Length: 223
Image (cartoon, rainbow, N blue to C red):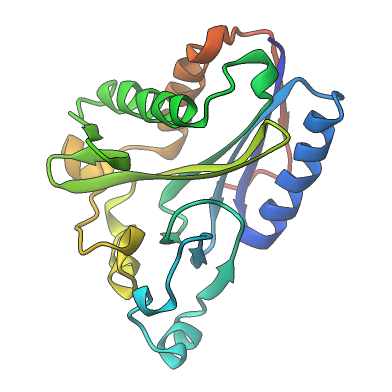
């Protein structure tokens, strides 16, 4: 199927949130078959539909000093952190072209991440009963989606840069006492975020027969 690809670069979470809502409506209306949105975010903590506020370990004053917003959003899952050292991807996919099975779709997203990380020598995998991708006992990628009218939004984030892990100590990631790891940690070398983006683009084509009949739009991208 055809799909649009957008690269928003480093962008405020709320601006990207509104952008994906706009794209969601276009996909729902049939203007676009589907879309992929790539971006990075300034530091922010988001709370999914199942999140508990007490999984934020930092005080309001500490978050204010660090300039970190806390936002309640409509994705599934618990609390997570987004920062510029991550790559965040929002697949706005119309399930009409895939399989109307949300659990299947989540496993497909995990598979895309695992295959992409393998390109960098990282041995990542799934954990039974948990959503996301892991390197041994540490989590490297988080997934939280919403689906309305069989169109998905929100998505996944992969920890890439080693220097952007410190803010995870401000929360209990995904509501669990777990350690987060970056791709640079797992691969043992410096990795550019655009390298991971290219790997993901290639692997996303494998979901439900997606091909490369896509169009690319770069909107205000900043490195």
